[in-house]
Each structure stands twice: as C-alpha cells, then as structure tokens.
Image (cartoon, rainbow, N blue to C red; front, top):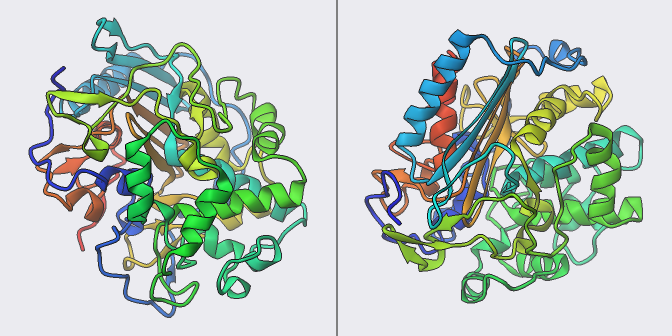
Length: 437
C-alpha cells in the first residue's frame, strides 16, 4: 500500500510519533523527547487570555442544529478537507463540523486499502489523548461537587509519588508536575514495540513513570507533557468515586451526554464494528510503501491518558459540551477550566490548561495511538466544533528526525488529522497555527 504524500525522512521514527502524537496540538504545549533538553524553569507563567470571553461561552446551553449546513459552507469545508486530505499520509479520513448554521459530516478515502472498502462517517476510532479531556472533565466534576480540590496534593490519594506533597491535582492536569512520562522510558518502549498486543495495567504504568528521573524544575514552574500525570488523575477518580474509571466515565459523562458510540475498552483490544484499518510506522514497523497494520494493537498502555474509542458525531457533541460545560459542569467550574491555560511558551502562544490546550481561541485536544490520529477543537469565538479523524498516524511533509517533536502543528511536517483540521480552520477564517519560537 502506498500512502498519499508519504514522509520524506524516516530517521528516528521508531518512537517519535508515540512520544509526540499523544500530545495536544498546540505549539505552547509541545512534548519533549527523552533526549531533548529539559524546559527552562519559569517562576511565574502568564495566565493565557486565549479564550476572550469565558462568561459568554458558558451560556451556550442549547443544542446546535443537526440540519445540513448551507451549500456555500458545505462547498468551502469540502474543498478544504479534500486539500488537507490530499496532503496527508492517510488512506482515509472523516470530517465533522458543527456550528449554529448546521452540521457537515463527510468521509474521504478508504477504510481498508486491502479490500478497497470506502471510509464511512460512522466508524469507531481510537482517539488517543482526547481521552485526557474526559479524565480532566471528571476531575472538574469532583471539584465542583466538593469531593476534591485542584490544590490537593497527589499524596492525599496516591502513595509513593516522590515529592507528592508538593504536586497538586492542578499541576497534574496542566502538565506542570515535572513527573516524566512513562512513554519516554527506553525499556518500556522496547517492551511495547516488541509486543504491541500486551495488556498494561494502570499500576504498571504508574510504577514506570514514578521510577524515572523527574524533570529539572520545581512543581508548577514549567510545562512538560506527560502521560504519567493523567494516569495518576485516573487513579484519583477511582479513589474518590469508589468505582472503576470506566464506570465513573459511563455514569458521569457518557450516559448524561448520550454518547452512545464512545467506549472505554478496559484493557481490551476489541474494536466495535464498523472500524477502519489503522496504519503506522511506529516502532520501526513497516515502510512508507507498506506501513504496519496496527488496528488490533492493545491500547491499554494509554489508560486514562489515551485508551478510549469514539466516533465523529459523539466527539462533536463532547467537544462542544466540554468547552461550554453544558451537561458536564456548572458555569463557575467551567470558567475555571476556560481560564486555566498557562503560557509557558511566551505571551500570545496559547497554552495548556486543565486537560486541554488552547490556541487562537480554539480549545480541545488531539489524539494518537498507533494507526489512528484525531483532532477535536471548539472555536470559543464562533460556537464552532471541528473533528478530524484519520486511519494513519504517519506525519507527512518535510519531516526531519526531530521535527514533529519540536513543532507538532508545523504544517511543513504534520500528522494527518492536524493537517486536515488546519486546512478547514483556515478556510473558515479561524486559523489554528502556532507562532514560531
């Protein structure tokens, strides 16, 4: 199989996408690899004003129309989606857009290159780090009902975290704890790629993350993207609610919002039908002409940070709900989330907040597991949600070995869902692109 517009450089792609792809698509929140220099500590990070009017955003409680968008918007979005898809290294894609003017939902390319089966808009999709937004929403629900405080130390809920009395739930949620991501551990990487069907328990992931040397800054003083943070938050949810993460997720978010096609696999690689075949080069698997099929690789290594499955229409509903708080959080708690972004990359670059990123008024997250890539962002200025899903995680463009890690939204080298998302956002006059550092 030959993917459209394959990457031009394969050097060091053994782990690069795994480390970067489960990251938010904001330059201000870019992850660092194990070989990258540690962030320069910043005593006080500027609170971002990326969301210009949080008080207005939380008043958007009514559902948006599900009627088709006007023809002129359909044409504009379709042309932009096709342009982005043509430049993306993916066999298929789904695009979903919703605004006060209606809904756009369309599939492109193929779900299975071996059979030629067309991509369809109803496929289930592994959403990777978009899972983090669900975890953070549940933490904020516990804050809202008085069960926890964002200023609580993680040591109150999970034992064995070195310096845990100074690491708060807020620091875990906004990636300023300094705890290193277990995905950076060379032994873990070797184990995972040697057997991508292996089941990982949350406790195993926590132990690996906590065994690693922490980043060289005091808790709260700098940004460092780490899956260990979100797995710990998942443990907090279980401790406080007294039920499993999956049960808490179902009771608190999936049922109330009517997300009937969103699933937490609970350690299983089972994939509901219909789903697309997903392709990757991670772990040195496959070649650009014949990428590895990662459809059935076990997603348990992501747990509360990246294990979930969903589809385009459910993500449209959740993307808006988590931005406005409708059906999830009271307005006061939602404003806390909308004003939680911290600009460690400098003023004007957006930032990362309580389980999500912000850039130019767009709030949300991107996600990636081997074989699948996704973007889910809500435009707080225009009540607009865009979801893009692809059955490949392979970046396209002029990809030097460290480009994707350093600039995850640099369209010179970008993941497929990001490329399509950026093309549509630009066509709608709401660009989503980082400022260069």
